[in-house]
Length: 112
Length: 109
Image (cartoon, rainbow over all chains, first blue to last red; front, side, top):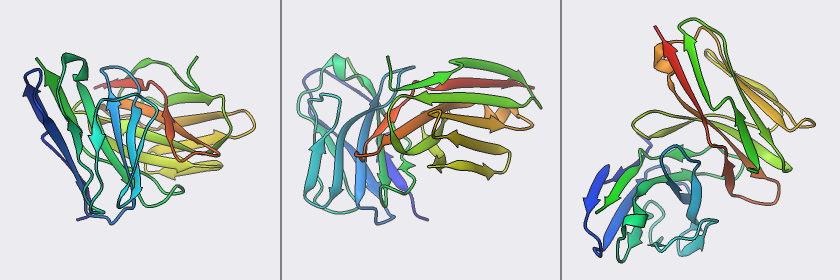
């Protein structure tokens, strides 16, 4: 079944640790996105990719980095986690700009 | 002021009621999305509209491009419809979505 998977679902980590949030999709979508969402607030785009070896920063400044070495995989890395990074991170993909989006279940990150 | 404004912010209804959630936007758009976010955080795409009206089961979405306004209607609401409903727009020259803050719907049995 075509879908988009995010792991881990929940993560509690200490300040200064390096973490990677995983996102994989089985639909062959070229376009992939990372959004950050604080509780009760709107989603903000932090990174996006239009295909392999293509990555761009979004509208919200973020200390994270991404890579797109394979079509299906779009991991997000925080080199040194801080409490200000505590948030929900949502991955999404789409086939084309005129297509709908498929979202993952999200990773709820808490940095203590 | 947000480019995308939703109303109401919170909505409580009794099971069976007809629900309307509104979305107004201030930019020219190429498409508008309605999304559903459940308490667990995952998001489901409900509709993508560029004109007119779409229907899926008990859900109906309409858009008026001239008035820069869209509505999401839920007929015969059910407690399982309880979720946050999010409006998002893609402006004409961009591939990025701009999101509203969402409308939290609670349907009581």
